[in-house]
Amino acid sequence: MNKKAIFVLSTVMIVLAALPAKALHSPKEWYDTRPLDDKNGNKVEDAIDELMEDDPCKPVDVFICFLNDCRPDNRMADLKLLVEQYGGNVGYASTVVASVVVKQIPVERLCCIAAMWPEVGYIHLDHVPEWHMTTAGQALKAHTGFYSPNTAEDQGFDGTGITIAVLDSGVDDPGGPGITHNHLPAAVGAPGVAGLFIDATNNLAFGNPDDTLFHGTGVAGCALGRGTAGGTRRGVAPGASLFDCRISTPGGALSSSNIQQVIDWLTWNGNTVVPPVRVANMSFGNSTPSTGTAVTASIEALVASGVVVSVSSGNQNTCPGTGIGWAAVATRAITVAAATHNGTINRVDDVIASYSGTGPGIGLTPRAANRKLNLTYLERTVTWQRT
Image 1 (spheres, rainbow, N blue to C red):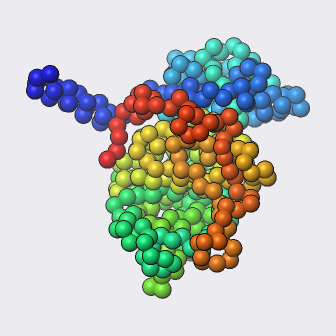
Image 2 (image 1 turned 120 degrees about the horizontal axis):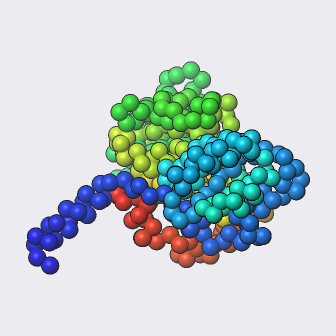
Image 3 (image 1 turned 45 degrees about the horizontal axis):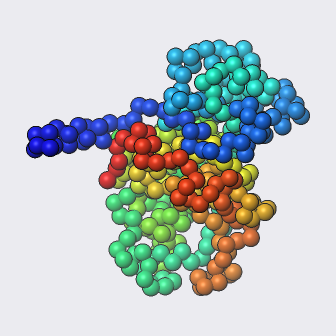
């Protein structure tokens, strides 16, 4: 290949790498496990079938996931009309995953939609997440000389130059009223965007949200608390910047559809934050074992865009080893179990807590082979890679 051809090819690759992907992708294309949660093959989650037997008129919120790597945009008006005729309404349509949220539709109508629409690949509930962090460990073993030597900071890593997105109940500003942790950095953002939050109408809004439940502030402190002169209240990455994302409504309600809105925004826009978002933390989950949902697919796409994602494995696992929820099952995210410190700062006696969720996910084989998620998918889902 001559130099001119190499130059042209390189230019094309650079241009393509700078463009965001336009295609939407079907969550179910990534799984070979649908028989595990759709045993009768009617394209509807078994949990929905069970609800239909108990109360067919019960209104539910669901995700409709489409096939063939595209949401049928030319038929969205038809879907909206049909859903409204059934008494429901169309909510958030993902910009990353081929899915749309439908709210308050009678459960008996979902089988009709699945049967009538060949574009529909799978319908599942808008599963309600749960907050996962009741106490913080005393010894994070991250910063220099406080608990032990040879820490990340000893190697020169303290988060400087990156932003951590904390997807939680909001984070209180330093020095403000009702502060539970006053050693955090002020939130940063993109031009005109200081943070994200879900408003009272379940829509994505921009601003600097306060902590509605005193949960997110504590999580942020573990991640990037800057500590005191005595070395206490210091997080893993005290040099990092904070991007505040409140995934709950002002009243504290959680839904996976609201979380997906925030994740999708970060996938496309996290690099516009200064410094850019390189890490996202999600200390929530679902105690019901799952093979994955549309939001799992959005988490995978966020990782593909260049963000390291950490997810809680859950705090309400009554039968350890039987599975983890839809957020923790994302194979490219880092799933973190709960630990017990046994009342000491010595890490030797730290073990996984008895209540912690543990994997593997339902139907998943070891990480290297458990999904059809490959470089071809990565290239067509997000064609740019952050540096």
